[in-house]
Image (tube, rainbow, N blue to C red; front, top):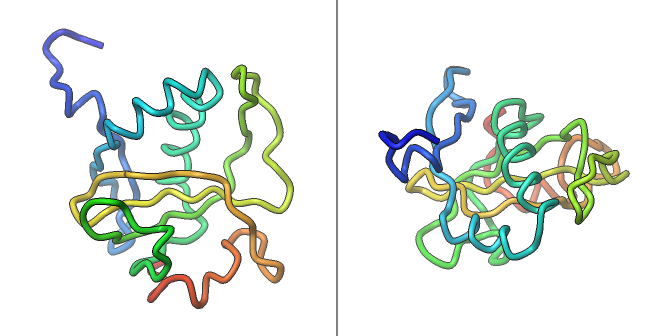
Length: 142
């Protein structure tokens, strides 16, 4: 971290734009990052490596969240990036295999802030997509 970088730049991450495939910048939620630090090294590695991987290598991008549990506390939920990272992390930060039958979801609000990320159950018909994706989101963009 250089001294000339702003706090916002330190929280920035690149994501695939579903409209044209180029990369654009999102900001990681500072509140969420602080909560990861309290959960340990594995959570920090997950938030830094897996979030970025899924944002840049999504299996699908959905828009329009329909579940209250997926929406942020503040603002409106907007997009959900879904993917299967090549690894996961144990609580102490050891690299492990991704959990079977799970996909990784990264949620972005309408202000282009990444506010949540987590492992979620995969669809039984397509292991690259989240369970109930057809009713959980309004539209699939990618």
